[in-house]
Structure formats: structure tokens, C-alpha cells
Length: 191
Image 1: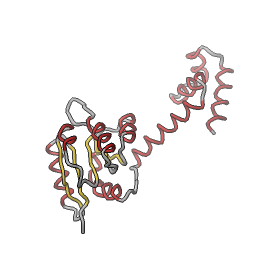
Image 2: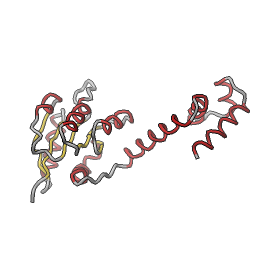
Image 3: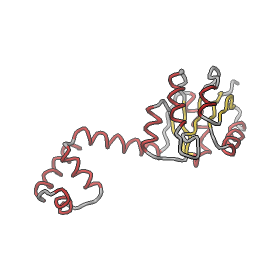
Image 4: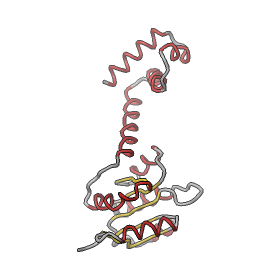
């Protein structure tokens, strides 16, 4: 049986060794290339890489080099990319997908990594619920910003924060009746 050849990019030596040991216990997985830095990762030989597993943050200072590596890999023809991180910032997750990631997994869910690798290898995308919810919320927000007027968007954001009609009217310097009408318009547009 051929093993799935992995590129692992992780700046923390403890995590690197732990992930390698964990993955090498699997009969069908092997870490073929590893890199601790963005620079090392960009110099790797990708010719035998099936799946790339990339840490998003590659330094203690918050360098999001993993996102840059994902983009480079995608441009180099590697499209089976998984981002590995302890961060769940929506902007970072969306940028990871924009840069070519097929999946995104939290380090706290490390026990799922072998299955995520196998799914990615066969082009089966099974986004984890926490990541799916972030993506769904971002898509909803994008839709909202496209179909609402700027004035309705202001009202929508305040409603999402839990403000009452009276509080919104006071904050936006509008009448309660105007806020009520805008809320009705928003409801129509979003249903």
C-alpha cells in the first residue's frame, strides 16, 4: 500500500515531533518533508508531496507565514492543503481558504488530523463544525452587506448587538417609527 506523503510545516519543535510521531503510527501516512520556517518550506521539494499540513503562525511574534506558504503551494500545483492552528480568527480562516487551503483544523483537535489528511487526499471536504459556523456567519454577513443600504446596515448591526428600537433611534438620531420601518425592510430583504 502506498502511503500518503506529507509536507509538515510547524515552527514549534515539540509540536513538530509530536505530530510526526502521531502520524507515523498510521499505516498509510508518512511525513516526507518537514520545515520549521517559512523560508525552509518555500525551499522544499514538493514533487512527492500529496498533502501539506501547515501551521498558520510560524513565529512567536504572530507571523502568519503559513498563509503565504499555502498560496505558494497552490501556485506550485499543490492543492491538498490543510491549515493547522490554535487560532480561530474568522479573518485568518477565510484568508487561509482564499490562499488555497482545503481544510482548517485546530491543534486542540489533533486526534482528527489523520482523518482530515485522508479526507483531503481523496478530495472529500468535511469542514469541522466550528470552522463551518465561522464560514457560514461570514457568508451571511457578506450577503447582508450586499443587499442592505448603508442606513439599513447600521440598523442591522445595532439589532445584532441587542439594542432596542428606542436605543437604535437614539444612537442613530432617527425616529422610532423610522427604525421600525427599516427593521421591516431588513426582514423582507433577508427572508
